[in-house]
Image (cartoon, rainbow, N blue to C red; front, side, top):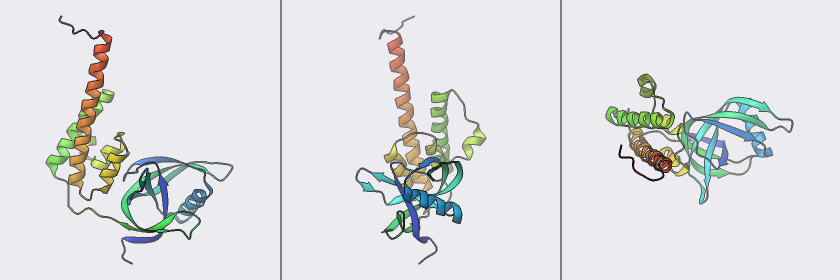
Length: 208
């Protein structure tokens, strides 16, 4: 087995998509997942969140580490915050453990560093959306450190869009996709603001 593969890797099928770097709050209450998290805490190991979509479990998931336990509950459950670390592919499901697990392989990007022009376009769109939504202008230094995953983790693009980013093995491809998603979100927000303006003026255009 190569170094990028791991057997008996804990898998947590959920109705959400996690991205590398994203913080994910989790409420652990099922016995099998209590066991999983106890082992992950004891062994300081990762587990994987995989989107359980309507059409089944997706092939690409995101490994996570437990950032901190917020609360231990009386029944053995817990509230915790996990952080996404790296994408992986599920090679084979395994059913012999007390919790869902599988053989997985970590997947790497095929390209090198991001194209500066693509990164700049994504950062400009991200800054525009943040200003529209919050009136806050992001600091240029803050923007320069943001990759596609980091930008997408702060905006609710929907599960299909997030999974699309996770599936891509190129930061340039992810930057192109996140820029399109940001531009679409800007248009939707501008449309909503325009509709609210019309509603406040009873649908009449003010001429002066």
